[in-house]
Image 1 (cartoon, helix red, strand yellow):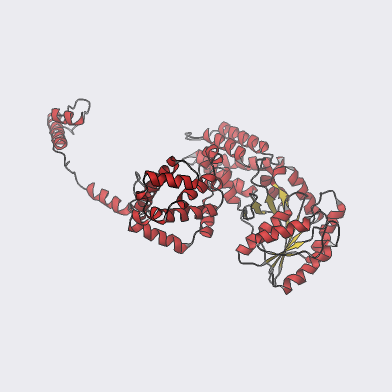
Image 2 (tube, rainbow, N blue to C red; image 1 turned 120 degrees about the horizontal axis):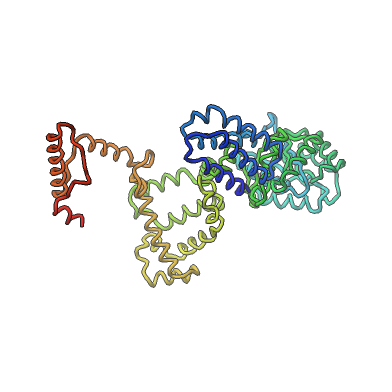
Length: 512
């Protein structure tokens, strides 16, 4: 959603690189470009004005004028101001002291409240809660059936005493659900209300009646992130008519402009609490303003990536795999490779995971063209192998490759490529596990091998070392002798003149 905005901001900051100081003209030009980028992203005009004013004031201040790298300082200012208009700190759910905690969902027709109720229920169940979904949308055809199906897919309970389709009293259903939740020991109640238009006074009054009947701990306004500035107008109408405590953005994975996300928290004064960024029930998470600002500025979102990895990967399995790799490359088999690949797949779409890495905005075309089915093809190839072939891939010869290719439905070349890539990956992973660092890179702290190599280099640097190559040593000795003679003649320190120095003939032959 923020691709266009990210590209415009990246181009703006690129023009600032290499400047030792920023003139007032540079600041004005940068502010103008940022203003255009925000307006093109459909951000509300009052938000743009406030944002640009803050950036210009701070960019003209001492924090930029005295900075060693003014361009980076301006990026830092834009990042901090983006976090500010997105809501500042992350807003957490307020839970009732005496359960159940009641969460009421409100919003426009078609904003995605019913699906979002299932996503929120699944998210809460993963946090250790026991949520209950309440079908209080009795207006829309089959809304009750849809909520029941979503609840079943999410693995959470549902309370739906009325058939809906215009039959039943939604206020009574919402009120009775609290008693039902206490009897069945549910600690969170999520009330799905009917979608409405801001101008529909009857439905707005019904939402207010449900709110008064259940006294919710949180009223969440669900807004479609793809509708742009109109989301802000609707949010203001709901705030004045019903009132809400937080905002949930749905359809954040769309390709529309992301003006709603950048406007709604600033205009309404209510923070964005959750974001839905996909069709699957687990494509849902808490909204972190700092992480979203980082993504917009192509700085990545490593914290979210780490959290996903922690939820997916078992600590015991990770330690077991590290111990295997430390013993030697042959300990790591294709079965282990398949297991690791399936764990990564559980984290979600590969393109979304890669998008969380810093600097990936420059490669978004390659990421968007990534074929997720390649992982499935690789898994099919490995599963077509015998246990002996997975344990020792070196035994895979031409006839075995042909059999594996037929079993997995791929070309023989694909099997060969997979095995070769596996050997390379195994060698690299084993080297890293044993403290060798990345091939071609110096040892890094935490990656092993770093401190030892640094000590070795420091030890060598203490005194003048003689080369072990006789020809090179002879050349060094002759160069030192020439410097001494020149110093003696000139009565001062030796002046090196490499352009006049001639290498010995034997050394020239050695160098070719």
